[in-house]
Amino acid sequence: MAKLNRDVLYLISKELQDNKKTLNSCLLVNKTWSEIFIPTLWKNPWKDLVRENEILLFDIIISHLSNDLRDNLIQYFNFLKSSYQKPLFDYISFCKHLNLIVIERIINTIIDKKYGIPIVESVILNLFIKENRKFTHLYIPHRFDHQIHLIPDAKCCFLELQFLCCHTTIDDNILNGLTEICKSIKELELFIGWTNNKYGIIKLIENQKELSDIRLNYYYSSNNESFFKILITSLIKFSNNIQYFTSKSLSLPFFQVFGAVEISAKSLTSLIENTSGNLIEIKIGDTAYNGFFNKRIIQAIYLNCPNLRYLKLFVENNNILEFEKLLINCKYLNGLFILFDNQKIFDNQDNSHNDLFNILIKSSPINLFKFKLWFTSNIKSDSLKLFFDNWKGKHPMLLQLSLRDYNDNYNLAGIYKAKGIIKRYDNEAYYEDFEWIKKKV
Image (cartoon, rainbow, N blue to C red; front, side):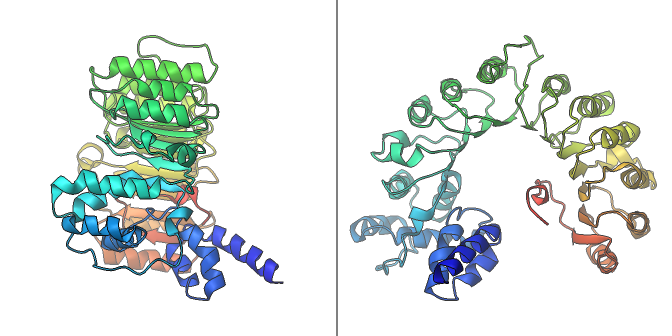
């Protein structure tokens, strides 16, 4: 029975892995529960970490250091204690995500003497990169220059790495070192710089055996165009697809997730058109493509992305009929983030948002009920009420809005939650993406 209870608790901990508040509560039950839930809680301690808890987390990390090492760091921090109780668990050993971006940010925020930053970072890196650590996810910050591949236990720690997030401007020696160690990366997220991109990332990509998910984030510039073309060529070779289009017509037949920032509309449509229908996620809402270009992008999506699940997109009101075609053709869509510019869309027309609501009601695919709508102009409660009333009979929606009349809209949403038309509502449709598409709700 005891073994069965542990098995059940392990399953519960897995289901609760995205709910830190509940996981923390489970630690208080007894020692057995703590032993089971702590590994889940520390698998990715950086996730959803709020600023006020950063020092607390760093304090726990510091407690793993020897007294001598900790004493050496006291000179750089005001908050470090003179003595620490040895932690009950080796919490760091449970960590599967090594987020050097967050670690760097915390150190830069709380350190008193900036000249000590490299020293502190080195100590922390050696604390995490040890023989008994096995990381599946690695996040490397911009301008990172620590030669982590040279740390004695780096090979053991990163041998099973499945996810890598980094900038293509980091030191080639680091990229080459990771290339020698990491051969089973499945997901790769790259931030491509304006200039000074390093070609070591090409070798790293070509050395992978299971790469299937590519995310590119880059600012278009003539300075990085040649690098980008070589990068895309490498990705195409990796996919064993010999088709390659020169100039700006680039084939991305294996892409499933695509995000771009400040890329030209012509390049963007070409990229979408050459993904062979495999895209399931598109995030291009950070740039407002206007008029004809907005129309061409919408057309490229509904003509080439039949399997799309999530879309973040800027839409102009005069292209609303093209957007309706997108809803009709992309029948698997289940998460939608639309951004509106009141200067370009509303143009002082009070009914333009009603056009959008009517199309969402009329033409949304059956699985689409997760919406995030960002407006710079406010929406009247009567329009929302009409939208909610006409949604009756469909799957209860998850909705985020960016509206200034917080109380009125929140109260209105509460009424429709009671009616079963809305399942969840937030008046917090910030510019960032949302995670509803990735979670069971």
